[in-house]
Length: 367
Image (cartoon, rainbow, N blue to C red):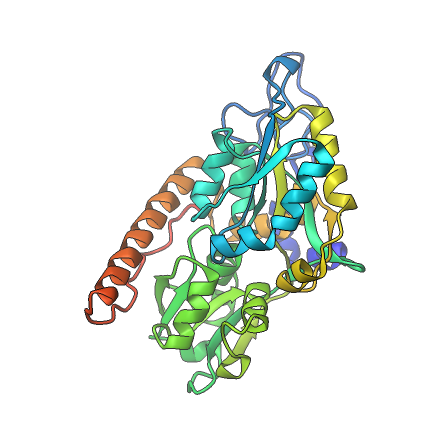
């Protein structure tokens, strides 16, 4: 499946995503720091595209491990789903492990950057922000007995809609999730122009704030369509949050890797090794596997290999995973949350239903 993911990306895009190691020397001179795309404070002298473990005096060995999962759906829902695994980490590492709820991709990245988060599951697109800006080191993905999980971008419309193809979306309201999302924003911007459809020009982009919110918005009629991650949509159907017969898929992409599991680069090497062992030895209990799309284990993964298709998409739409793009996305997430809270307050007080407002054009640089 790994080779399949790489094979589905055009060669021209893949060339942009190759690790620096393909052309760069293996090691800097003594004392030098090669960064590549990493932010200040991180080095990548072995050219594997993630932050190196620092010298011993800067390594951490926390008494309590803090873990969280990407906020692509209700954070409280994931806190419950991952409770068995959090308990496993406590037993396996010998360190108390607690689940930390985050409400946005930006907050999750900042939590790891600041040292408050040690291990996390990051959504596909924000994984690259976590690597470049927070020193995250992806090492695992969810999967089943035959290999790790992938997902597709699916364009959803209501079943009773007269929209039959991407061409029919011209002039419509389409929900993108957030500027940092691979499946909810970047991949559509990379792929749709070749299909004769340009986001922002041919249709109005509305940022929903999450894949589940996009799905619910299409279901409610707030949006005419939405590109979302197929795995999130499938889980919502399986849980009964929405009915599959209420939707149609009018377009889908080739597969992408799903969320990564990463640890902070500055944990002691012995602890990093133990965390990896704890992930790879774990088998999901039946209830957890059901909630997570039938996945029952973790598979090893690297940012350089498995995330090459994601980086290729970002390069194709000139959306670098840098500090300027991250700060812009953080502001958008805060503004979107404020609008949702205002709409919720208005609805609770008996006001008129508030249709989501446009989130503005996506930045020239990415989320």
